[in-house]
Length: 576
Image (cartoon, rainbow, N blue to C red; front, top):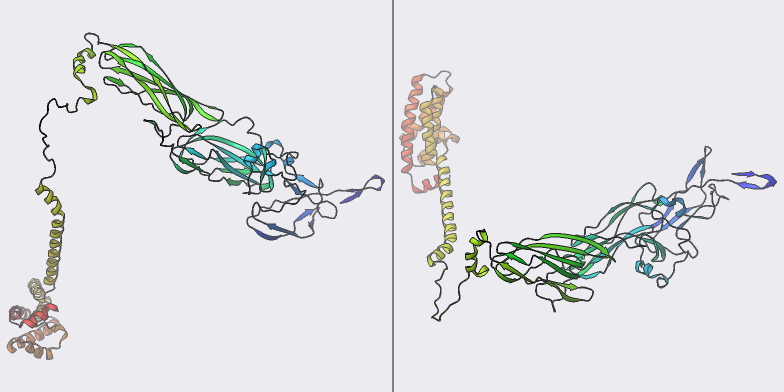
């Protein structure tokens, strides 16, 4: 929009609009032209918007262009004007409410060579660019350590735009003992460093001290963060750090002192105080051992063992602090020591072998506890009652065999092994048990098969039909059972299923199987009578009774005839 001012000058007014686009894949994209509505009229931008998205860290560098600025179109010749021409930096839009803010005067247009950067910036420089706007990084010093040596892990955020940290989830650190560290002075300030061909601000988020618990290639896990800022719109962006790998080895075996425990790495010193120096049998003295130094303080000390001296479980106190980026402090062990024998007792010394990772050599911190004068127990006390037993007690060696006082022939101790019979019994029992179980299984299977065959035997079924015939109260039911018994008896005697054979043909088939003609004629006649009686509306009781008596006699004769059949017919009957 243009208006005329005094003196004929032209005053240009306009508005500026901008959109933020975040690329999700590589390629060349034509972006639709944006539109705005001004005073009810739709205005569309002119020209063509084509964007080429390349791999992170491989963007071309245009000489003289500030990587932290984005272009704002000029109001002349464009539908959208600008409230301020040229380029606008992101840093001035957020103010001091954003902790990671970029100052216009701190970032040069052209990056320096890595060798020209300050020492801190060179340590933070990277050859590739993981993300074009913001990313997080884990750095360890040193990245090669021994078990128990302190490794300082630093969390850094690299950014090229104003943003604010909203979420920070620590890495797992499963194979490390973790202690928090206070950040050194000056670490809260951002450092300008080189990432690929671009300038980045790098700022420390946090620092922790790690103590490896085992040897190997140990991974820290990833640090997860979320940021918000104007460039990302209303959403929050999540960034995950690198999974840092730290090589950990055991201290060398050469010159390793006796009693060294893996993980005791640092620089330590022992002091002790014993009170009182005179006591009685059964009473105790207090021994306070103080351990100071840098490194992971050992949780326990090895006390000297003496016959007749008992060390009770210690009471511990500690104070850990950070000095020059190193974990250290002090820890005290308060022991109560009791004595079982009178006399001048030497307590010995407390020793702590440790490995100095800086000098790569072993040392032993020790403190001498001195002597204790132990008087006899007071008369009448419990310790006095057990004094005689204590005098004859040889301490931890009391239960061991006494040394021989004279020479003699060697006598071998009797063999305490297995008896031969018991041994062979244990060896042979499993295979014999398997064989017996197999025989029993096969016998049971044959018995079940014979039982199934017996239930399906026509002779058994014929006798069962006779029993049903005797129990039936109705004449028709008796005749039906008698007819079924005759058919089953015929099948048992000749293997012929007579139900499927016509009565006119049945006689010849039965005779051909070896049955006598008179018996065959009676069977056919009885089957005919059964059919007549079953189809009579009200059969006479005398007729049904005659059928029952005749059926009982014929079934008995047929089952007896089955035994007299040839062996071949009996085998065929069994197969059927």
